[in-house]
Length: 167
Picture 1 (cartoon, one colour):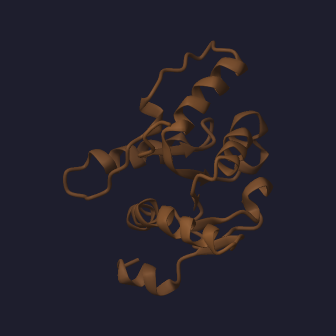
Picture 2 (cartoon, rainbow, N blue to C red):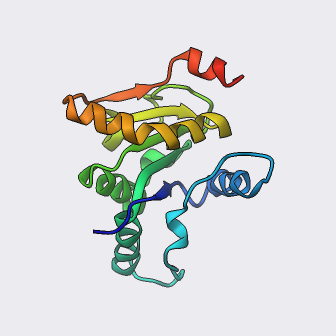
């Protein structure tokens, strides 16, 4: 079994890649503690790759994944070819899922959340460096505890957690 220490980020590459790039910039900034081991660094995908090849490479990345981050924008719920497949794989592999609302909502956004993850065991947060970092670092152990207790469904952090971070 592969060592699972990576963060897998799924997103709408046509519309929301700048949010992913911002996360990478947070990671590179020496003035922050934000860090994640990016699963996208594991293998290269070529733009001309077939769907089967792409899914095989993505599956390799998921083997090393500790936490799955889903960036949810205006069109994410309509993406079936890869994003939905990635979510389904994370659910199947019981990888902790952090749903990040790009619109600032701090809990599940019923109108934008992809139906496949809407009622799954996941934590929903707003797009902000501090809360995303908190979720990446803390949700995996909470996820495991909730799963052991048989709990399911969407979770979110209380407003006091955001306030404690100055958000």
